[in-house]
Amino acid sequence: MLPRWVTYAYLAYLIAPIALLVVGSFGGSWLNTLLPSGFTAQWYADVAMDASFRRAFNASLITAAATCTACLVIGLPLAYAVFRSSRPGVRAFARLLYQLPVALPPLVLAFGFILVFSSDALPWLGSIWLLVAGHTVLCLPYFLQAVVADMQRLGLGALEAAAESLGSSPRQRFFHIVVPLLRHSIVSGLIVVAALSIGEFQFSNLVAGFLSRTYPVVLLQAFYGATGFACAATVILLMLALLGSAAGAFTAGRTTALGSH
Amino acid sequence: MTSAVKLDNVTYRYPGGKAGIFDLSLDIAAGEMIVCIGPSGCGKTTLLKLIAGFLRPDRGTVALHDVDVTTASVRERQLGIVFQAYALFPHMRVWENVAYPLRVRGAATTEQRSRAEAMLDLVGLVGLGDRLPAQLSGGQQQRVALARALVFEPKALLLDEPLSALDAATRVAMRDEVRRIQRAQNVATLLITHDQDEALSMADRIVILKDGRLVQAASPHEIYDRPANAFVAGFVGRANVIDGRVTDAANIETSLGTLAMPGHGQPAGRTVSMLVRPERIIPTSEAQGENVYAVSVERDRFFGATRQLDLSCGGARLKLETVERGAVRFVRIPREAIQLLA
Image 1 (cartoon, rainbow over the protein chains, first blue to last red):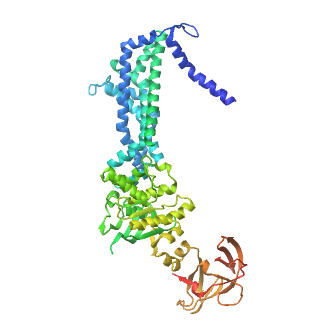
Image 2 (image 1 turned 90 degrees about the vertical axis):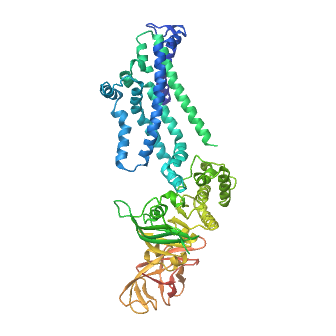
Image 3 (image 1 turned 120 degrees about the vertical axis):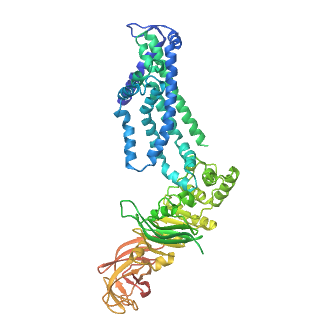
């Protein structure tokens, strides 16, 4: 009985702020009361019309997409190399890489980027590609972890050995065996990457240029203005995240269905 | 006759260890079924990997159909390999698994499909081509793995403990199946196992390894009836190995008592080991006679057709296998049942 009660209490605690955000985003005015008064969709229209929010929304989508691409292009071969290698050096490197998000807070990475890329030699601070580069560093370990764990779970080594003995070339093995088998973990890894990239604030806030500010960075500004506007802007970010997971779940479900008949 | 697989003085030592394969020479004739057995860590799997090309020998050569492949890749060797856990591709249908070797060789889809179906016919899986591997039983998966390893007409077939993952009843039935399919394809085969029944019932020739060295390679009958040494005698089949000292030209002093064995040809005073198979010992009611000993029963296991008894006789223990149901008080060891071991 008690555990269930605790669960409900926890769920309420979890959902209440989100529910209040949604309520606030439709509220007319909200000043020193428990709930706002009035109902309006005006805040959403305001956010949609706001040039800086529109720009930030696009910047976030581009950054997330580019980060996903970078993680896929760099991460998949890297995961493969980490999995295949029996050399202790490579394994140690992989462990280091996995620990990176813990060892290297976005703030530290951002300071590093500012130091290096504000110089005359590398004056790239403020470009969206630098933002993507930073997000890739921050997100890659999560992608690697998802994919390498799946490689181990599937016993990819034995399957590849079998394919090799059956006459398959390294390239054929990669496209016939490795990629199809890893599709679930690749997709779920990319969803994690996209979610992290879209929600990332610390690094983006310091490194993004004025024109390449991402959504969370601009969102912070909103809280200095009207409460309803801030709520509406936050709910949009929330929807974006939910949409991402839904799309991910759908893709994963589809690939499973395709694979099973 | 040319040999399908020929190993010449192959040595491979695992880096930083004493394990490996040492000075091993072995021929597998076309269509021959060789079963390699030995205790864990004897080098069976290493031997298979050396032939398959997953490992390269430090010394010696590996040849397939008279072509030296010592430095060739796994892919170039074109051997059919069935792995212990089958290693079927879980995302491919059964027929796609079987057709995979043809697909990577660029065969047309229709040809892939028809040859895969023909192979599935041979292994007794008609109509299951569209299933996924996970939808098949262990024995069926085993057959798929076999079909996949044979569909491209490999130079030889290597089976790494192929039956060990199956339940006991399926395992026994699959022995005959594997042999039937192997004969139908007439492919030189090396089967690795730790199961002596499997070895005795399936092999044309049994190869016994110990500590990476070949101990004996011979037909199942010869391995059983004339084991090269006490290790082989004890490893294949049940065995009584009796140590003794030669007293004269006809008698050997053992812990059982004096054992008459005329014509043993050993000089007096030499210590010798003798093999007596449990089923060759005869329970008897007479206390007198040559090589008759009084025994007491330590343990008596009933298997229906036979009984296996552990007997104690003086300071020695004897294993006896018999169809007799009555009490066992004396046993006779016929001269012809005694064999000197090297």
